[in-house]
Every structure is written in C-alpha cells, then in structure tokens.
Length: 167
Image (cartoon, rainbow, N blue to C red; front, top):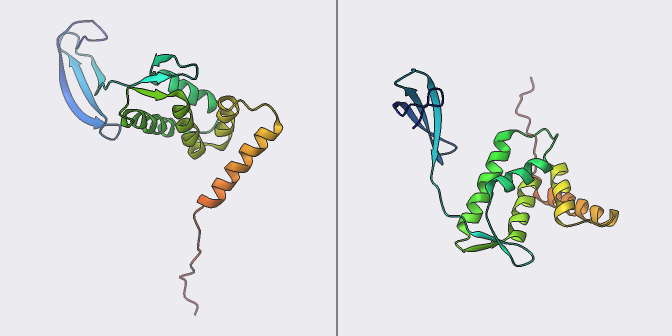
C-alpha cells in the first residue's frame, strides 16, 4: 500500500477490524518512511450483473449511480448517512442475490422505492414521481394514498400499560 503522504510503498498494518457489519475490513496503517498514519478499507469485489434498461440495452451496474439517485431524492432531508448506507447495502445484496447475469432497471427502481419508503416519506414521493413519471396531481394523490395505506397496515400497535401501584 502506498503512503498517501510520501508515496513510499513501505507501510505496516497496525490494527485490523471488521467494519460495516462485517462487509469490510478497516486497517490502520503506518508509513515506515514518514511515520504518518492512515486508514484503508478492504472489501470483497463481486461481479455485479448487467442492468437491462427499458429500451433493451445493457449497461454495467453502478453503485455510484444507485447512491446518487438515492441521495438526490433525500436532498435536504433529515436522514442519517448510516441509514442511506444501510439502504444501499440492502439493494446491493438484492442485486447480487438475483444470481442472474442481468437485472432489470425497473426491478432496481422498485427496490429503491421500497427502501425510500422506509427511510423518508418525502424522498419516497420525490423518487416515485420521477421514476413512475407522474403526469398530474391524481397520480401524486394515488401514490400518497398507497403510502398512507401501507403505513396504516404496517403501524405497530402500541399498548400502554400502567404498572404503577396506587396507595
């Protein structure tokens, strides 16, 4: 590993730990020449399937395009970066689990919509409006009604139990 400070190749690993739920290895390194310390991350590189676009063309899967689309929908929303990273990881796992040489862009889009629905309602509607090409207010209203129904059906029931004793 080249030192980012002096570009020498002589570095040593000081500490290694699992990161990102075991998906990566975080390594603390020290340059033997300038003695600066830096961190590197190591992860498995898996072959992603090609993405089949709506016009039938095939393109390489791009994690950066996936992340950019999610970030655009979440722009100026109060969402933690850890939640975004977790959503991206879940989508990447679905892409890899498809075990196909091709995955439809439409399917990836639906996975993004599912994840955004869990993270932020406004981002969900933003992404859905572009992805599903809403043409009028009725299309927005149908999507909002669908979201409300899902929220109502998945809402955990809260029961309040009073454990205090009266004297």
